[in-house]
Length: 392
Image 1 (cartoon, rainbow, N blue to C red):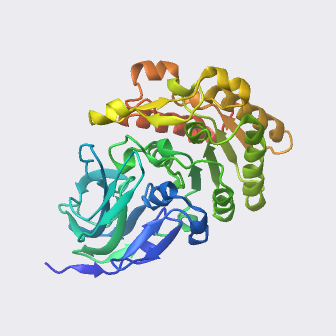
Image 2 (cartoon, rainbow, N blue to C red):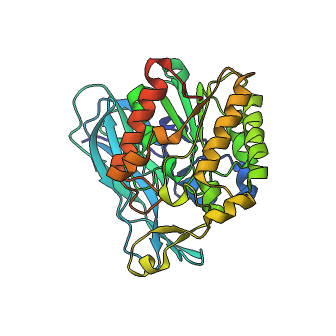
Image 3 (tube, helix red, strand yellow):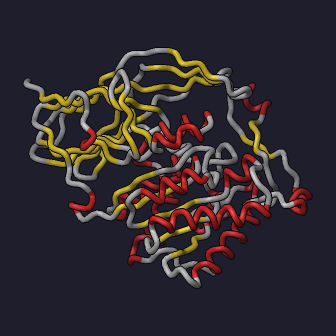
């Protein structure tokens, strides 16, 4: 069998990344531009390099496709091994096959101290065979929570890049959020809620959501400002409570500044502000959020709040406070910005949903709830061209 090879993988085959970094192994998709790097911490450095929403996409008549990657696994001290990241192969928009790369580099992490040590590893080859006959669009969605360097692409027929979104008529949806939007507790990359929503709506997704790091950082706002988008959504709040990062007095001006910066580059682009989904431990109790040490010793990840409801009087933030503030800010700004909208996150996942599909670690939705959120978002926001009509 004659194989056609693309090595190294060319940038026109990679969709959903902000920048592509050349490494010794190949290409590393990044979801923040290099100029922001001096402003990162270790948490954001890891989250933005995990290719949530990134895919290798092309046209081909191949029946066999091989993707060579170098993944970086995370191994947490005193915890059971994490499952290998999943690669989803779609043909003409339908999920056909899944695969994982068992080897690669390993990042050993101490969850208590945060110390991390990288162990070297070798590239892995994922083989997808028995693809449908004839010309087709093939997308290989990369693991949403596993850093992945792209080394080479092989197929038994020629490979052609897809048209750019602007040429294909697809609208670009740029979404920013926390680990929930990056896909925590989802089990495969097209099962995270932004991808579910994007695929249902037929839009081109750029997911700049970062676990633990949706923190109203100015460099994130400037990044969004400078990227092309037909719709922008911002899911804000939970990480600010998790870290107990700011008080009520600072929160309002920070949100205004974040929106002001984005509006410098997108003065009329539909802009949707989404408040947090329902999360019992932080509805009326502020952070900071900590790992449950007793659960960790048993190999289980659970989160607990160390704040108290009495601290709200001191200006500490809770999810209920943040929802009220975001709703007010959007209402006030919408009087002079008709393309600014608000969506209450509990419309996507609320108390009734939590009773049926509880958060397994007290913080992140499970795979079924991720899909539910994506389906509701597609229905509320994209169906009928309605964008965030719930502003009251």
